[in-house]
Length: 461
Ligand code: NAD
Image (tube, rainbow, N blue to C red; front, side):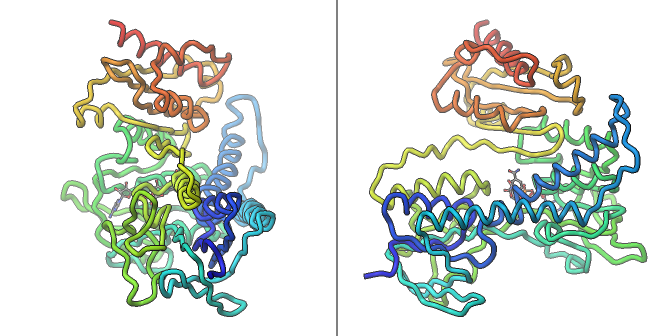
């Protein structure tokens, strides 16, 4: 007889979804959490950065308001208050998770869990240590930022996103960001909107190199126009302390260069955080740097399961949550209907980016014949009014069947529009079927009708 049917390690989006779903399906559940409920997403990731971006976009809108007849005097960004607001939002959501656990009768064990053996774990926290047994243990411990193993990366002022999110008391004069991926770009937007001099150093040939080429290239143009220095193909070598701050040395095509900042943000990816969770002698199999799991999310150790960033190549909160739900349903003997193969992804720069499915390049690489419909939003009324910079939408479909296979949107509101395309992919719809419904005027998504019309015409040629 075990204390619990399920012990979940980690109360982020994956762990909390798994716990709530399993409890709803009748399981006795405990969740061990070493920090605040809500995990990285709420406390040190998605929600925190979006809260900061809300403040910086208000500041930018006010600073640029004179162009539309709104004159702000004495405009001032108080970094202490901005970060205090971020903490307030995170605390509200974190407390919400605790409340949901309480009403679902899920035990929240505060402390760091170590799996001692299958079905047995120790939780060590501020209130002491306890051992718990559970029929199943789910590792949903997330990921932590990586640091570059280069000289100077341990200097004071060289920060990871988690360290930066703890808060700064003044606006940096200048910031060097290593890594032009999602985290690097969102911080570049936050700091540059507030008037900080930002340099982005990206090792590959474009920003957001994991996305469609045109997105990264368009973003670089927009950021440069805002005064951000963007260096791509930048091989970082070291950082050093100077009188005024930090200097990062890098080369581009073999040519040495440097960038200076009051601080340096290292945003070069996140590493699965499973280390320290398994007691010595308990060695789960790995798949590269993540835990290897089967189709039921079970690791190589029977009875121990893993979801989210510890076991997934795609580090996204909604992927972790979907896996959490699927895991719980499978654990409870249900057939899970959660779709895992259509994964939207968003970047909260300005204009925003949202993508799902295949890109043109990926389709070509896989030998899938596709046609692409496109709309540049130069004539879209809402875009003209809000003037976020060059915006576009691309939708692609199978050249023979006409079924929609993917989309790349870079425009205001993109994250709230992408699910139309996800649903089209899931239901094998064609552009003509998506065009059956009218879109309201004036909206950003009117441009989606234009991209779909362009695609439909190309397919019908
Ligand atoms: P990332 O993998 O998105 O980007 C890291 C970038 O750093 C890459 O472009 C890479 O080429 C570059 N890089 C690596 N080493 C470098 C070096 N030595 N010099 C210069 N550039 C270098 O990682 P991230 O931005 O740290 O984000 C981590 C994870 O969190 C990602 O999977 C991301 O999708 C996820 N995330 C998602 C969101 C969102 O959905 N809005 C927001 C934040 C983070």
